[in-house]
View 1 (cartoon, helix red, strand yellow):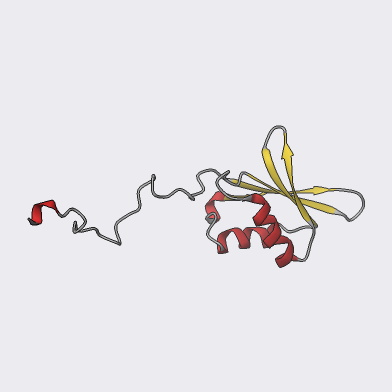
View 2: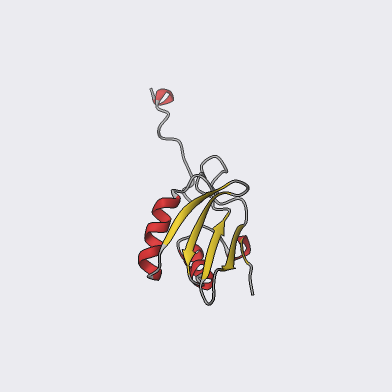
Length: 112
């Protein structure tokens, strides 16, 4: 009678999560760059965020938190890239590590 019950198998809740179960993990590096526009105006670009994340929702939260404008641009070489007004490199790196989207080693900050 007990042989037919299969849902009572022991499972360790603290066991390491396999790659199949870890769908939202960032595998590649995220590159944060700054581009000079005209005069003092700058543009921050974030490239390499995994496709399993909704970039439009990320940009919506970032715009409210950093008090700047931003958009998602479809780049021919890099795919979808986040663009933010101003120098937001340090804030964006802290934000990505804070929400757990990537580790410090996965985020590469470029620029002057």
